[in-house]
Length: 332
Ligand SMILES: [Zn+2]
Image 1: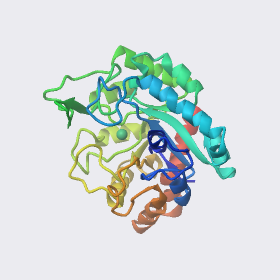
Image 2: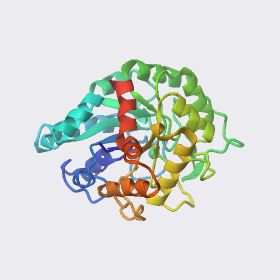
Image 3: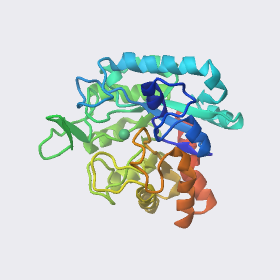
Image 4: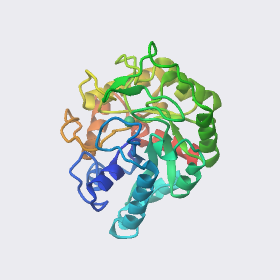
């Protein structure tokens, strides 16, 4: 079973305004997932508030309305032809059932919580619509916490502990974590500044995710988790996803090699049981091309891991088994 812990198929389909099961011309879509043998993808919807985010094509005036519109689109699609090929997975059993029925499973999430406008109660509605994952912040901080990147004069720069406030998890952030625990929603701490990361861990129950990116021991960046953070995620029983692309502007060369180097570093720190693959695929065709151009090339990851000496059992865990274990513990 192959699971992409972080991929943007739903964002891309909505943005293109095309049927869910069609080829979307980006680096992830349903036909490509089938080519790559992918069973499931965690789809973190990205609806950044234009008032908070930098100047880019994805920002919207009303993040919640946009998100609900995406869920409506998905419902419409699944009640039609796409429903024979795709299913929303609310539990690990749904993922297994989708695989048994030859469907691709989508696990719904959000990358950044601008749509909540600071109100954790909105999560109840979204959980009812199938949402099972929340990444607290994305390219900017919000009412809940601070991001490891900051928009300034129209450009994005890394959070700088020397000049940016030592932001703590807010009271609303604490309430949000409690609500996620209560509902059974995966907590994703990618993009959160390190001080807030530790505060989340102090109040969180159960396993936590860092769904995508690299590691600080390979590339010294505040966007990446330190060794101590990685060990702490493993202690929760959680998982860190390795990506073929850097988080934010970086000297790193995107591609399969970057992903495999990250996997190696994670395994050397915490063993194979806490490692996954989060592609972060969206559009950007060609950007990742060094050995892993799109999700149809997922078998290249297995090949690369084999060449680096991983056995079949370890590869199965990294490619999907570990995430399924975490998802089962959190969402059932
Ligand atoms: Zn991200």
